[in-house]
Image 1 (tube, rainbow, N blue to C red):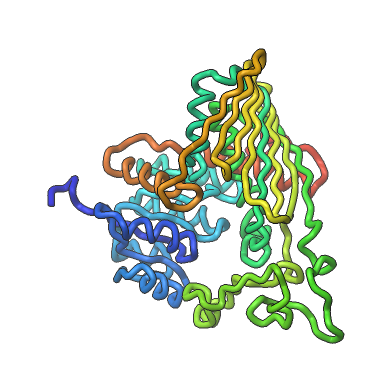
Image 2: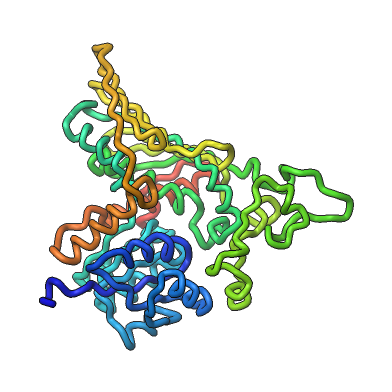
Length: 404
């Protein structure tokens, strides 16, 4: 094979569901890519991942260990959020291109350190903002770029995510590890706002959030005398009657053998387990161009959708990702226009994940400019970090505070 026909060599850092069932499965289907290394401190999980993907990679407990023996073309980082800074810097300093799943990091200070590493390495660092590749949002972006809405002065997203309740069962429910859900989850949406509006700078943020349902007072079953709930689904006395059971006992990645290595349970009770994040909230962002954005997220209820409303001086636009529908309401006309986006051909997040990977592969092969830069990731984290400070400290937060 010629140089431009050689398979790109990838390492996956973090062998959880995102690394294995998303990026891993997509990579093994491609003829131009191969997974040469899996990096995870849990050797049982790495071995299970290799078996699930039917590959024979090298195994390492850290990126530093890997770089002593292997230097892949690219590293995909899907490890827990609080590890992103260290892992990204080591990979970049080691001469690897990086696709870093959102968020860039859990603090602006760490984002700036990652950006400095990318600058000195001259390697590609692309953010894993898959929503930018969602066919519905790509169509919306096209309409806005065409001026259909005119000047956008306000934008809103209401996110309903029933599956988000499982954040409370996993490491995501620990503020120290996720940076809070305004970063882990909201970083998607803060980035979409900035992307749709051509990247105005956020100036200040207010947030109102709380843990109002997923606590011990709201167990969805009646306790029997002397029988406590939890501590996790696999051992809970109420597993058969709980409508929120998160059953991952059969998972090769998170079974008893893996737990024996690091003590990590993916199925902690979402009601009685310790947690330090919100299960619902609203954030308001003001930008330097005067525009405002409102993002609300709720992990309670049966609905799964992102519903956007965009207000411009020429039209109002409403969007449903689940219905794959965009409706344009012209300001001075009753002639509404509805765009129905065709069902995706497969792939996670409405067909966005394969397009995200394709963009990264094209960047590696052709030197195409990354569509999602580390600077974009930093501003997204800034909004999330400010939102976390706002609701925890009961005040409006100036973005400039985070850059001091």
